Each structure stands twice: as C-alpha cells, then as structure tokens.
Amino acid sequence: MEDVLEVITRLRLARKWSEYELAKNTGIPQSTISTWYRKGQVPTLPSLEKICAGFGITLSQFFSQGEEAVSLTASQRELLRCWAALNSTQQELFLQLFRNIP
Image: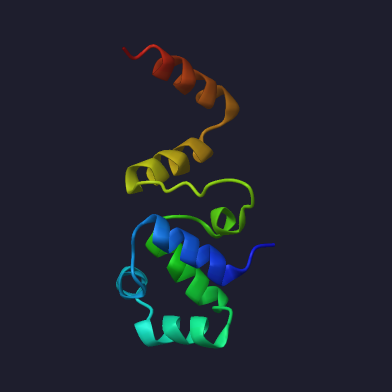
C-alpha cells in the first residue's frame, strides 16, 4: 500500500496545487496539513473524505494502486448515480440509445 501522504502529494502536485490550495479546496486548515507532513501523521478518515471530495475522487480511487485516479465532474457523478438505479434491461436500452446518438 502506498503511503497516504505520498498519494496526497502526488494528487496535489498533479493539479499544481500548493498546500494552501489543498487547504482551500478541502476546508482543512493549512496548519493541519503542514502538521501531517512535518510529523509524518496519517490524516483521519473524515479528513481523507474531505481530501477526496476536494480532489473530486472517491476513497476507493484514492487507495487504488496502479491506476491513475479519475476525476469526475458533478454531471458525470449524477449520470453514474442514475445508471446505478437502472435495472439491466434499462441499462441495455440506454446503451443502445446512446450508441445511436450521432
């Protein structure tokens, strides 16, 4: 398993965010984020949830190894929520419709 702080750093740098911008986008005080790095502390689960929300990813994506984290827009997340509510017949009909859109 990757080090949690290394993952946060990788995701932060991929977005060209400073620790300040991470704090701004997550609602976590910058002093707290600095303390994690300075003392090598692991963020709590509620803090990780805020970090993931700030990055626009799920906890599952955060902890996925070997795959680049995927960021979804609000519209894409809504589409996935709607998709999950469909039964298999409805999903197949939707796919057929979607494939026929020019």
